[in-house]
Length: 149
Image 1: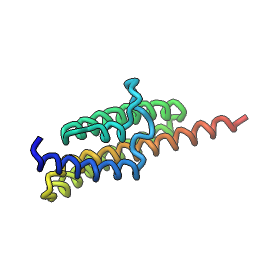
Image 2 (image 1 turned 135 degrees about the horizontal axis):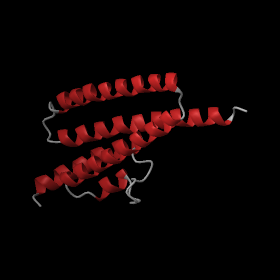
Image 3 (image 1 turned 180 degrees about the vertical axis):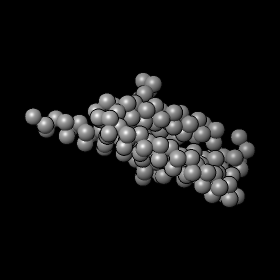
């Protein structure tokens, strides 16, 4: 591997891994049965393309989890509450579209060649935040329904 590429990969890993560690990415293993976390996948990655595969795989996993959490939440809501939740979901989806556009715009300005990695990392963080929000909502709904006589 050319020395400049090796340096770039080392720099990419040194920048992405701490970002993943500080944001708490991959608190749970993927749904496909693999026990490897995003952090572990990125740590093992030897190329920028491998890091990209880790991120895109985890994005798929997180979107699946978001869908599962949405379904679980909807089951616990009445019609009026469901309407509120559906508006919230639509607003979040609109936010994600606009945030992805902004991420694209800002990362394109980078001149170090790391824009795709930072773009994927930022998108993963968006999905992780939503998953965390939905888990909180589901927990609140579950605890609330358990305490009723």
